[in-house]
Each structure stands twice: as C-alpha cells, then as structure tokens.
Length: 314
Image (cartoon, rainbow, N blue to C red; front, side, top):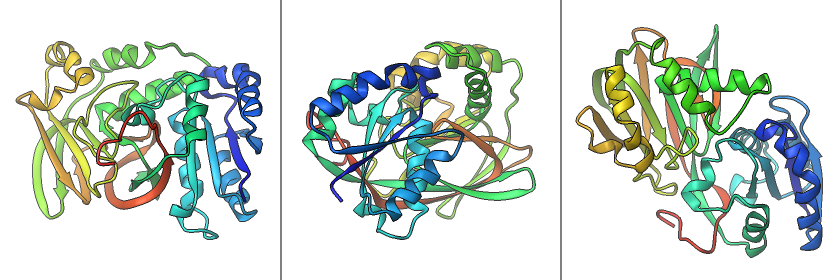
C-alpha cells in the first residue's frame, strides 16, 4: 500500500503536536500525501497502532512527535510478523523536546524541511538494538534505534520524564535535572562485559549508542555509525560534582571521549551488572534498571534520511 500511516502523539513536545497538527497536516495535504492519521491516547498506544495498521497492509509510517514516540513506533514495527522490518519505511516529523535521533542525520526540525525529507524518499538501513532489563520483578525487552543511557543518565531522564508527564517542560529541563541530580547520584561498582571482554569499574554513567546524540543535543557517541552493526559504548568513570560541571561542554561538543576518565568501546553484545541498580533510559524513555543485556540487530530498520547529508556509514 502506498498510503502513509501518520502516527501522531498530541502530547509530544509538552502538547506542541496538538497545537501544531493543523499546520503539519496542511503541509502534507499541500504536497499531495496520501495518508491516514492516527492519534495516540496513552503510553505505548503508538506501538499498538503500528502493529494493527501494518496488519492492514500499511508499509510506510511517519512518526509525529519526539524520540519517545519514534521508539514506540519502532517497537510496533518489530512487534509485528506480517512484513520483514526492512520492508517498512519509517520517517519522522520531529516535534519533541529532545529530537536526538534526527541530529545524526541532520533532518530539519522545521515542518516544511522534515516533510521535504519524506518527499525525497531517500532511505538507508540502520541498526536497531535490544535491551533486556528489570522493571520491578519483571524481566522485559525493548528495541531502540538511537541511544540508551544508564547510571547518572538514567536518573536525569527519570526526573525529566516525570516533569514532562506533569506537563512541565522547557528547553532547559534536561540541564536543570542534570545539575540537581549531581547531589543525589552516587557512582557504583559495575561489571561491563563487551563481546567477552570484562571491565570492572566504578561507573558514573554509560551511553550505549547507535546514533550519536542524547539528552537534547549531547554528542555522547560522536563516532557512532548507525549502520555498522556495532554499539558505541561511552563509559564515564567516577567523577566529582565539580568535574561534571567543568566538563559539560565536552558532552555537547563531541570531545567527551578525550577526558581521561572516559573510555570508548565497540561491541555487538553487552552485559552490565552493578552493585546497586543502575537506572536505564532508551531513546529518552525511562524503562527500568540493571542487570542489562544489549544485542545489536544490524541494518534492520529502513529510515528516510536527508538528501543533504550522507549519514555516518551511509
């Protein structure tokens, strides 16, 4: 079917999608898109909608929202068995608060530019990852296509998402909780096993990247190539509060790996165990805690990318 399924999260961007949907739909109409819009009503509803509509023969999907909406759509694509995942084409009109996945591909944040990317139809196959984690007594698994963060990252995401759920948000929300979390978070002893290599460290934070950005523009995995079949793991060892504040700029300008307490690794299978639970976020969504297990799913998602830039590895 050539018709597009447009999955709209009205609450994304602290309600910005609901306010701007008329503007977005008018651009799609003007460009003669043949589409059906469906609107999410609750967390994980996008996953259900995608599964149902792929069963009804939709094979072209647009996510309208932020990284969390995109993550739910991706889990819907992997959660169906009617088509191979590579037979589904996925595009994004970004309206979230972080919009980190699009940064790796330089996809415009303005609606006209984002729809232009859809119209041009340039695709590439990128990797996905699975992460198994604990949520209370349950062991669960989730797909992601950008980055997972744990430890300090997980705590900041948990606080940020709690504020978003209450309808509170602004461009500096993540920074606010990053600074406030410095006084609550304690590094802990962690065992990281990457393709059989065992690393024992006292860990402040870990990023497991397919894409390069997280946290609303932090360039935490600057060398990640989303189609190389490898995770880029950035391990930040125990840091003082003062050192974290002094090196915030490194997180944003991509030089974090040059810090003496930061080590980067590549791998396909990662297991993480810790003395105390490390909180997990994936694609900005707070999920659970350690122990954790990551597996790469190489070139398994067909995404629409910007003609104006060849994505890393693309």
